[in-house]
Image (tube, rainbow, N blue to C red):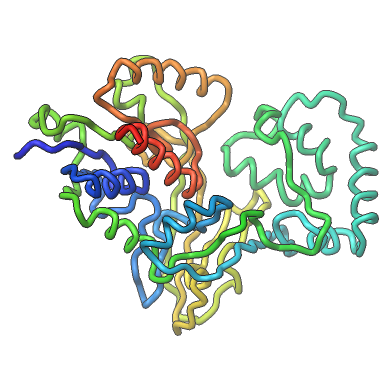
Length: 368
């Protein structure tokens, strides 16, 4: 094979943005991905006329006008507003915690009433210094909100009791004393009409792409394939786990097509009781206001990560962050490699932050 300027490992958002910007500057890029498709976890696939978010719900939101204008070059976005609901033992609550939630829970109408109810519960608990996540949450929101909307969901997400999780995971829990179901505070929000895959297709149009290609196997026979590598896989795997394994959480999806027009009436419904094994159900058509005769839903199950399983988000506790810092020191010894994305930098990124990080890497690389 010919030599390229850049070997980009991972056809997700970080790799695609870097490839697009590098090819604009006359560089030749080879993009490889171990999956059979591009777009990483934002991959969408059309089924029954519905754009299915194969790896979970991805709602684009940002307060960065430059990033919003950048992503809009590649697709037209609708005006979808993320307004999830939570189900708890036959009860339904609006999220994020707002006046609708507090009215549903206690029958209160005014912010003053809601604040008084929460303050009363916090005072009764008399928690001084929270020793774990449970005590931290109770001190922030009181017993009712914690028991119904936080405890079960959090324990499913992390696979651990809230009493076993460190308090710093939730330093704050946003509560709105307004009747406002918009989950995000960001100025710009929406879903690309036609799905996310088209965005990455356009970004990669000037690059060569190899799918079903594992980097560690590929590089054995192509060590001089490129002058520089952009690596968006697991940083600990890149360094052969020399310092040990970083921890991740994984997600398993059960997706099915239903012969009905509307299953749950909302794109995202969280199941906050511990007895329900999945964390939420996504109904994909509602992201784009679909009117198809059938619907497609995905149940999401949080699970522990182990080698061979797809990692979804890092466990950013003190122990793992310290281990990542050691791997980051290793990375500095490889000026021929740029590490990026959520796995390469061991960070939980929203999509706009991934794009910003990729553009920052481009600026640094090309001295702009």
